[in-house]
Length: 381
Length: 83
Image 1 (cartoon, helix red, strand yellow):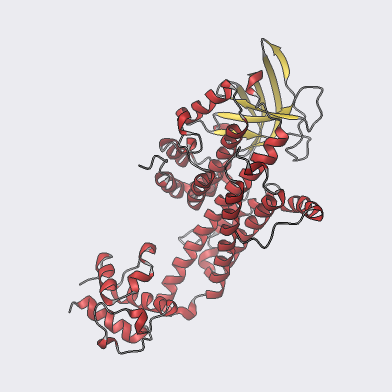
Image 2 (tube, chains in turn yellow, purple):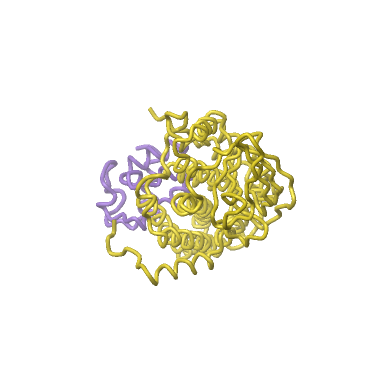
């Protein structure tokens, strides 16, 4: 019997409301409600804790399926899964953390991330915010976040802060803030070209938590072993979903054209180039999943950062290029902002890929690492 | 012979670039052994869609569908081609 959540209803809800989400720049509430309904938010949580017991590959497939209908909804699901992965891999034996995972599965809590902060320059490995003891084993946290995706809709938050007021900016812990532990005051909006439904607004976060609500592992290892690799894998799933829908639309329009005016009227070379990009990108995701294994597993601590970075930069650009080829193949029908062949959303949404964590910055890191260590080539497995 | 089968033979003759006349092909003969290629399958699909005013769903776009006149007939009837 297949006990894993069935994503198809949520995928339909995502697709049905994608245009409205984009046009109105609103949270994809229908898709997220359907994800809750199908218990998809607990997909990766082990069965014994009440979750679906799914793998990271299952989560990536879900992100693809939802992203194919609505990029913003796919990205919301991806970011949620990233937080779950961090909790699973680094929560340790802390009872509070274990109970919290049970709650996420049972109550289908949507988890958001607060790694951004004013005056730290977009580097998630630095924090200014630090906990202040407020007595009885509790602390107070105040953080000026520049972006909290779906902050206004998240049930719980994972927030980075310095270990304490004396700690260096890079000496961080990840705090888990459950429902009722935090308050948000909106300090900035979100009116972007694409990914308009993620509502990644600026907020002043004020929170109070028990000291055991911080994950026991330092954030440095959480970031390198779990948050970064899982992020790049599930994001790649979303981007591929967006581009797959663009290719579907272009294929469908090309077929109608071929029926009327013959194959010579179809830009076959462009379709082919779009598919090449996507087949290559899919192979990179599959390879990364195989080498990474599961969050918290042995392999997850050993996968090469070069490979994970390359996945991010290559897939974000390959999917964008693929939609570019689709656009040329579609002509005016693709260029329109509406209609069944429109690629407007796809192109605008995918432009977030190279920007969310700048590819140029990522490549600086990759290049520096390459000087010291080569990628593993010639194995073909 | 049903009208769908007759229509399939007409389309095969006109656009599938087979190595033998369509009229000589048996209902269950393998079309790929009679000269159908992956590429000419596309022309065959487009011509059948035009002739019968239907669209093959993605899940029907596999080699098995195009293997014989009978397999094409079954799929075409299933997706609403008039018999």
